[in-house]
Image 1 (spheres, rainbow, N blue to C red):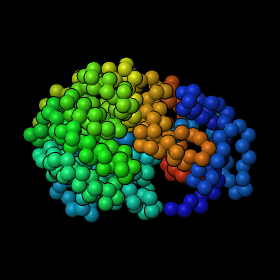
Image 2 (image 1 turned 30 degrees about the vertical axis):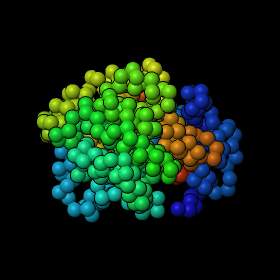
Image 3 (image 1 turned 90 degrees about the vertical axis):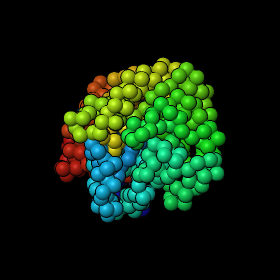
Image 4 (image 1 turned 60 degrees about the vertical axis):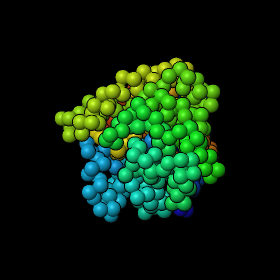
Length: 413
């Protein structure tokens, strides 16, 4: 989609630098043609540019959520509710969820499963300008074993390497820009134990090979220890959840530079929301089983130097579109420094998704996707989860949300 947005010059703000993990004060950021054209003090304003004084504000890259189900609301019994709705209704709702996500400062997401390839269709609608939302790398359907986690709704069943390979090819044919494989059971599928591995290493490897041939990043839903190790050995790019990591699994992740996308928010809400919120009993019980071990594994991975990226698993119960930044706060609460947690949701997330040449940093030549904040997120990481703290969400050089979107953009902040 062509970008004919007039240039936007953000003057004098403190700009987050990914390399130093600190803010550089008094920097101008010029956005032109949807890209960042300059990052320096004293940048000249081209003709027709809108200038905005950002003195006393903090500028960070647009946030990236590496694990969402953006077509889902996060209702307590989401899967049952969604199955009963016609596809057009779900599509209209999905457009609203995309808008909410962008308004919260999430400018890019990886969607790891939606029924009927709705996530792929939504990604196209955003790209064409029909719907307002973040950049979406959609996986289409995940690929799971017969009766495995996600079957019958967000995953296509497959058994044996050849069938897994075919399942991946089907997603690529549908337009998937990412691939998801299921290496273990999970919390939200009835009758499935999250401690149980699913695909064998050979099955996983067939799926990974097919995805990597097409230059797609591969995520593995992996909670069980053996499932995690099967996935790592098969060459996946990221382990999603990683509930039961042992020393061998952590060592393999360090050796192979496999990312961990912990999704701490998902079991937190299921367990703490509980039966009182209307969450099915089997989910609450399984969340109870995973919660403490999940946090312990995350901390052990951080201590060993495993690479991490932010992902919420948005769409799980009480895990709603637009609340994504709560995961950054949890990542900091459980072991990352605030600056590192911010990197996990920006530069490191872009690196995982192979978007480092497109977004994730405030750097000349990259997409002009950034946030203007009223508080320093390193001093107060929880401020990222407060909408009133977002002065502006800028996507492709255009202010699309935030307090500034309610004013004329050429007025002082």
